[in-house]
Amino acid sequence: MPNSSRADTVLDAEELVAAVEGNPELLPDIGRHKDPVVETLAEVKSLSIEQQALKADGQAVTQKLKGATRRLKDLTMHLRTAVRADVGLRNEKLVQFKMAPLRPRSRKPKPAEPEQVKPAE
Image 1 (cartoon, helix red, strand yellow):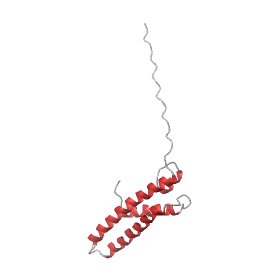
Image 2: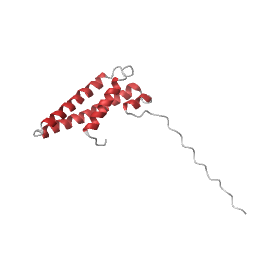
Image 3: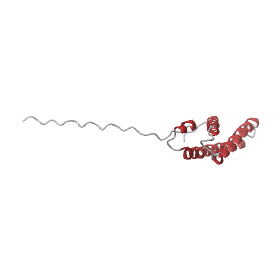
Image 4: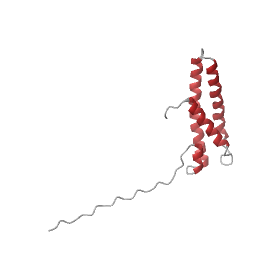
């Protein structure tokens, strides 16, 4: 997984939660996966505020914040997996959750075989 900033991770989590909350009829039982993401998102935000307020004690808070950000990334992966399982792998609604649905692949045309010319006798 490529490195991303904390702001990108928080924004991604916020957008994912908003997409999940915007589709309650599509994901009726997703709460058990969404709730930990919401809680960890709130934790990341509060720790970020705490980090800004306590520059002198920043190292300890930074370690907690890195751990919470890692947990948030893991939990968003779990939530995406649950959404994919509940919605379906081929459902185009997955695009709203920043996931690519499985789509049929186009077939490549078979290469034309070169015609063999008989040598003149």
